View 1 (cartoon, one colour):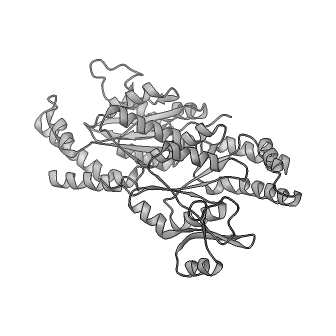
View 2: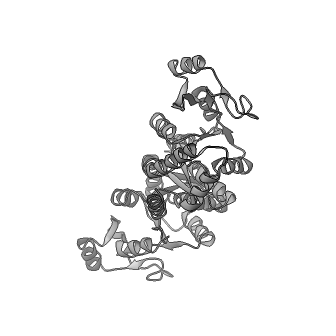
View 3: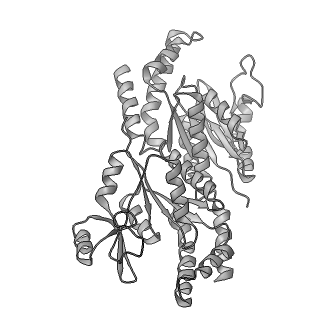
Length: 208
Length: 208
């Protein structure tokens, strides 16, 4: 029985520790494929093309948009970020579960195009800790920190309307285990079980 | 944070081993409450009032229907069967997850009244085995067996449209573990996380 894979969208406010939770999830689940985002921004030191991002020129990215090759995309700070569609489609068809690490605007677009996508929003254990973490980032100046905090607050206000599941990142292990539970549950969902159901119905018809 | 409990509806065709799976589920999950159905049929040997069923007279049952005290009910073979609402509501409010072992018609009614109910349909590993099990029941005459088989086939044809999740009973342990996964996932769902989300938003407001 070849099941279609699950499209899992994971979002969370800046500073919530989403990357660490996703890494842990990949440790405990062998059936996952991480969708590498495309972007037009320049690589930061240590970032590898095809691993952290697929780096593209503005011309390449806009051509991909025109050709309908982006599942979702958005522009932030003058750069495009988006999810190339073909790799996602191919892996889902192979039965792999595909993880998208995207922000709230992208999640909204994915859900519109693929309503069967499973969307998870990672929450901080409490807001004071999240704020401290955002303030504590020494890599940015004060105004950038202020924007980051305000964006996080705005996102947290919108998330309850948009996402299917909410996982508190109290510990990385428990947050990853909860997302794994959500995946396991969805593997029993109507979409994933379509082939199994079809087979049962054919057996019923042949017996009846 | 007081979470509202999850209403879990479990159905499956006659002979699929639903009772054994539900017993196993209660072994591995401490937060469950089993909703005892009410019925007007007579107790069979060994059946205990309030444990296997809540046995009622026809007059009592019909009064409960009139007073809106049944979450769902149906008539089979001249007897009423149904789910008393007050106990279910009370346990959900206490944060207990409530398990209803009801057939497809009841599941449809529950889903209509409480769309947030989680519905699970248990499937046999294959249909030949299910048929053999139904034929093998020596307690009934041939025509009763025929009715039972036809009901099972009819149910299996309708179930894919109605239920949220499908669990194959290949082994009792794995089937119960899958239902437990579904419960764990739903504990991260929007309804169950309502209080946690409200709290986060209050914290955001006080910080912003």
